[in-house]
Image (tube, helix red, strand yellow):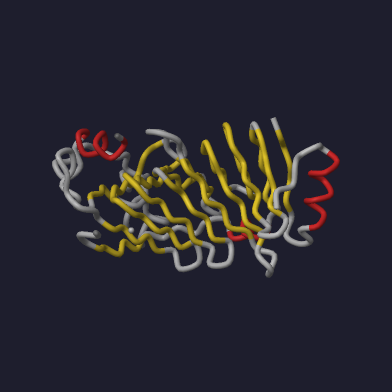
Length: 230
C-alpha cells in the first residue's frame, strides 16, 4: 500500500518523497440537457488543500507530471473524498491538480464533499469521475448519480449519463444519454423541500419544515436508479 500527500507546488518534492519510498518514476450522442441550480456551497478551502492519496501501487511520470494510482485508491483533499480502482493525478503548472478516477469492469468511481458550515454532503458516482482543480469542477460520466444528503438523510438525487458539478457557480449540469433496453436516456431526479431558515414574522416555528426526507415518486422509481447503477 502506497500513501502520500501532494501539496500544491513544488512537484519536485513529490518526486523526492517517491524516490525515498522506492516507488518507480516513469518517464462523448447526448439526448438532452438540463441545468439544475441547487445551492451547493461546498467547502471553499478544499481546492487549496494538499491532495493525499493511498493505493496498492503508484507510478509517476516526471515528464508529464502524472501520478498513476491503481488498486483500492482513496484520495482526500480537504473534505473531498475520491475512491476508485484507478486514478491519474496530474500536477498543473499553476499548482492545481486534476484527477481522473475510473472503475474497473462494472465498478464505479465515487466522490463526496461536505457543504460549508452545514451538516450536508454532496456525493456522486459514475464509471468515471474527473476533478479539475483549476475550474473547481467535478464531472461524473457513465450512469452518473449525484445526491445531496442532510446528515445521513437523502434529500435530492439526480441521474443522467453525465453530471457536471461546478463548485464555484453552485450549479449542476445534468445531461441525458441515448436510450437503451434498460434506460430511457432521460434525465431524472427528485428534489426535496428545503428547510426554512427561520420562522417568518407572525408565524410560529412549530410545524415548519425541518428538511423533508426523500419519498418515492413516479418520476424516479427504484428501477430507474437500479438501471443507472448497472
